[in-house]
Length: 189
Image (tube, rainbow, N blue to C red):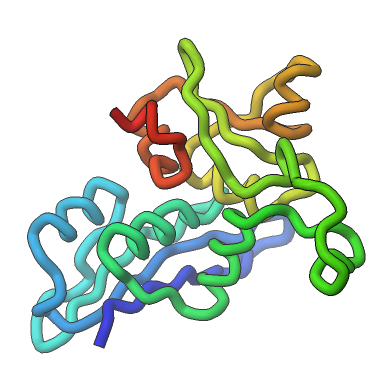
């Protein structure tokens, strides 16, 4: 039995509030190890209970972007099994943006996707890390904002051509490591 991971959304209590999100992981105690627990703790998760045969970890509910990046990291690094809705959200954020009527599925893509419409990729600049995103790709925007990235204020035409209409950036290496899975090999060294 794998460790299951689910993103939970709580509806706003009052008019004008935004929804809050928290991440819940649970599974057999023997599957958790110190390295994994330390990793989850550093990303804001706390043990809800560690007694009995099952262990549960959770992030506190927070208003803002959901921690989709953490779902992807735990899935890739430790083999967590994502619940269906959570997996769909994460995969949608990472995958190329789907065009209007999705005819490419039947007749093939007419051209390669570039910029914000391409699959998620992160590049290292001289002082910042940049991630591709387009204005219309809401799932990717939530993914990057949840990872602590912020949109570029006024992207140049060259930046828009390469990274999409709403590229994201961070100068913090710790925040950049949240998207390490999507970087080109050279910045990883």
